[in-house]
Image 1 (cartoon, rainbow, N blue to C red):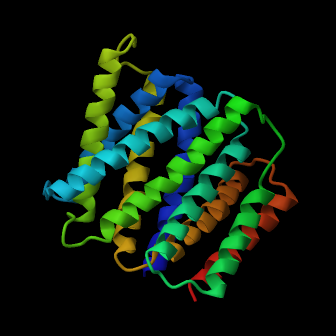
Image 2: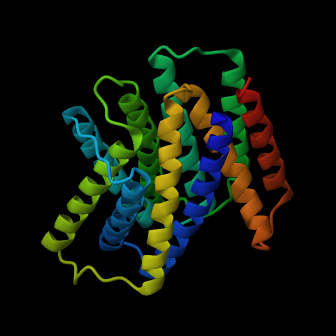
Length: 281
């Protein structure tokens, strides 16, 4: 059941990534655009999570502090992502994002004592190969590379912090409450930063708002699934599975949209799919 949930999470992340790209095209690049995205997606995500959790909110000092750190990572990740799209090679960006999101939680799980098997190592290597096969030539300027590396680290840290929180059941709140804390802190922080900065207000276009809102719904659902699954599955298994799933679903989404999918990308998706199945055993 938990592997089915992870597959659903990977699908939600894949669609969300597409919506994030569309938001950037509507709202533009820069600090203000990223703050507005974080603000409106946090408000929408907060509403969705409150409904899911039946307006019940658990509170603990430990979870609030972890949520504050988690929120700072998300704000930085959104800012770096929007800035990276200025030079964007979307393929290169996704490589750094997905490999970071897989590798850092995998290593953290191993350091924390999760069982390391030859199968898991092989699966991670195959997924990394699959991701690199999707690498296209494009913009590789020094500024772009700095943002790519920031995305690598920050997206990986999202998984690490999630695992850290869920590994302390005696101190932490339930999964939905934790995400509610992160949405409240992120939204408040972004509103303060926008008000204190040189922004001309909080307004964004209708399409940009729609993209941020739907993206927030998908992201909230996907992250809630990950947090619930982390209570039962080791991070060294979960994040490689999600990474492989994102590659497969991203390829399928491109096919459905009628975009040209190279033979190499199809092979990469197949490798990722087989690796993900292997990880379950």
